[in-house]
Amino acid sequence: MKNGICTVAASFLWFAVPAAAQEQATALSTAARAAAVVVRATVVVATDPSPEWHRLSFRTSEVLKGTVGGSFALLEPAGACCGRSLFALQPGQSCLLFLRQIGAVLHPFGGSRGVLPDEPEIVAHVRAVLQTGNDAALASLLARNLMHAEPRVADDAAQALAVLPRLELAAPERQLLAVALDDAVRRGLTRAAPLLEAAVRQRDDAMVDELLRAYLGAHREDMATLLRKGLGRCRAADVSQRLPMHVVTDAGALRAAELLVDLPAAEARQALLAMLRDQSSPRVQLCVAEGLLAAGMRGEQLTSALPAPVLDLAQRRLDAPRTFRSITPLRR
Image 1 (cartoon, rainbow, N blue to C red):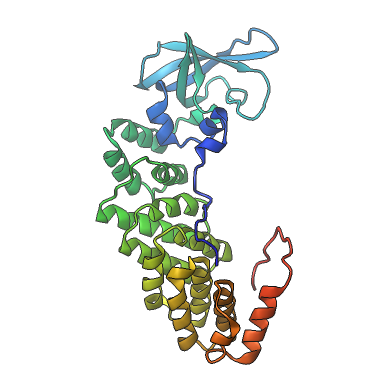
Image 2: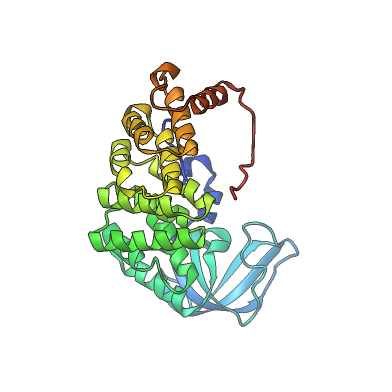
């Protein structure tokens, strides 16, 4: 069996990427708290000092954080390259800017993530983030915004919630998280990954139940795979003990078997043996048999619980040479 320690797409491996890439991936909520200046401003004119540099002058509309004058300029290398943020702006355009200060010069924080359209929903979200005094208050705000009508606010709330250093949600907020995750899985949204990360970090029985229901009922195979990897990071004993009560269909039984096979053998063996007693579907039996054989059980120990053809196929599949496959075909 696999060791169950899987990293979902929402996991943010900060140590594996350079600082510039970290800033590019920064959620708005994180940028709002880390930037030296957050300001609403309007582009006035381009004042490029040379063909190699692009400089824009701005007129300040409202300062949300830090100190900046009534007018200021931002400078970056010319060209429409990755990480550049000023080249697409035109005179008269209103922006919400997250700025960092290096010496006496201001620069967009997080590259293109530091320049956003000056839209009421985004400004209100950032203003509310800046008014939170600690991680607990921020977590509560983010949980309430997970189903925001503005997708950029909902996406940001999910991303920021996933990476909070201390994530402690009260029961109502955990329920909001569960509802948002269920919605994202049902609709196939990319925000399912950070929502799953936040849910896994809760480590309570109620959230494990929510994850199991979402996993067993997922219509999309990619979402089921994502959820299975997330459940593999929960306490294996909790998952294996609570899983049977949620299995009500043959399709759910197969998903349950696939999940148990991914868990550590010591925690999942009894649940897998119980599935052999309760399930007659050949596909479920084959999946369970492969998992038990891979965990070290001998074929003769399973002869009384499995039809001979199923056990024989499981053994042959286990003994077959491994092949590389970079694409998993979708099941029809």
